[in-house]
Image (cartoon, rainbow, N blue to C red; front, side, top):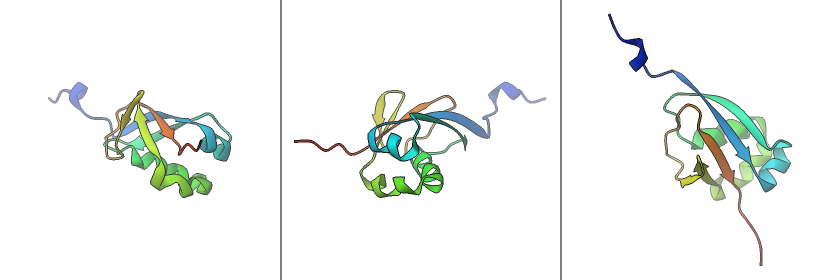
Length: 92
């Protein structure tokens, strides 16, 4: 008999925090997403651009943070993670 408590879920739920231009494009400060387990953080952006194509123009310059820590786009997400999409910032 197998121990079900050690099985990895096939789906995870994450919260995506949006700022500046991203928040304006989506008209929301955050979005909850359900993703396949073992998804990289870059999958969040791919999913969002399907629904909000205006976000695509910033993909190459977006930074990611998971649970308040900057990370690269290949970091694997865990159930309950909070992802922040950090848009390019202009200033002088």
